[in-house]
Image (tube, rainbow, N blue to C red; front, side):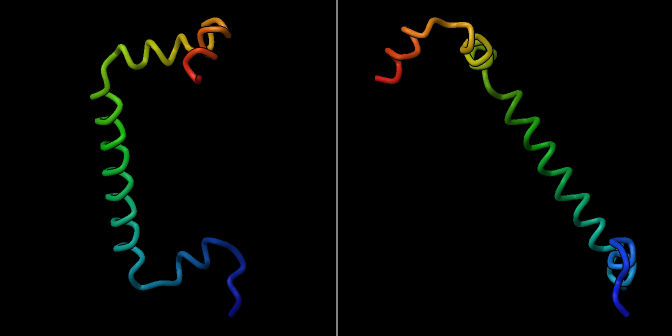
Length: 65
């Protein structure tokens, strides 16, 4: 039998609940880790990055050379 859609492929396994739980746990670990990394950086880092497009072209060129 050829699966007609994604639901047929996902629904045809006996270990599907296990795979779904593993995928959920991996996503949660990734998301929580990302939030931790973002909040650990100092606010000054984000202020500098936020103002980067507003700075003069000469200042940007002096940093790259």
